[in-house]
Image (tube, rainbow, N blue to C red):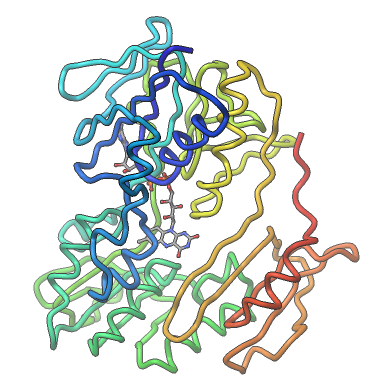
Length: 380
Ligand SMILES: Cc1cc2nc3c(=O)[nH]c(=O)nc-3n(C[C@H](O)[C@H](O)[C@H](O)COP(=O)(O)OP(=O)(O)OC[C@H]3O[C@@H](n4cnc5c(N)ncnc54)[C@H](O)[C@@H]3O)c2cc1C
């Protein structure tokens, strides 16, 4: 292959470019990114960067040495608008195009929005974080819709800035579908212990200058409103490409699409393994998929399959939450160190006598020991 286009200049795209070089590819790599910024890391956007304790430079994914050694042809501030596999071309929003023998799709996701909340802040990009950070001035009251990972981290950061925070969550407990009721209660306790007013089981109707209006008409007063209600994979530019999209770009177990010269990685990749389709929205997944996708792209066929570690972390208040594996609601949860009322504990999920998931609050050492032998979902 003479030239490979990587579409999406964030974590998954950068890891793919690094992996292409690591696996010996010495042709051209064009890295196409809709954002103006050089590739940066998103996790600090809801944590230290939002708190004002991390600089934009500290987010950069590539240092000067990486930039020199990778020899990337950057096209930043430009969106890919179409993929024409027959012509081996990626069309660009500036009217240009890139001819490429191989394509890595790494377009991630956009923050989902809610009807009636068009004026709310969302948090996906550096520009989103800059806008939200400048709104978090002393004395403002913050309402956050959604108590998932991003909503909880924004709440935590806002409390660290001394702001009044209300979190509005439709579920009975935060993160309950991911963690189950017992650990969801721990997340709720973290909010309560740090002065966040968490209101679960509420339905929101819209927002105005006074705050957030609930479906029952109650007003939750707020000066700054943030919605943290998930993301939507970016696949619109692939219309007409012939690739199957739907909750991401469909691939086989090796992250290869219907076309052997097109692979997908990161939050946008919807891979199918043992008849099950999966898409993950976590940092480690975006990083770990690149070696597999790139090996298959260079081989021109699926020679390796992806096995996810299912590792996620989240920093909330004084706690670091870590999760590994793929627990299901019917797995048995037990505490192997501490208990749910303590500030540090480790719990495991078991299924058919095997450990299938580990969760820790402030106990990285034991967590890391227990996650190693985890039973992972079968790959094809
Ligand atoms: C605020 C925040 C905090 C997070 N914290 C954590 C955490 O603590 N732990 C954890 O495990 N994960 C965390 N994550 C998730 C993690 O950052 C993502 O899983 C990761 O960024 C996914 O990388 P990606 O490259 O697949 O997608 P993205 O990071 O979404 O990047 C996709 C890139 O593609 C660009 N793009 C999209 N469409 C086009 C197009 N048509 N043409 C050109 N470019 C395009 C986008 O502009 C974007 O730059 C966090 C995410 C956010 C937003």
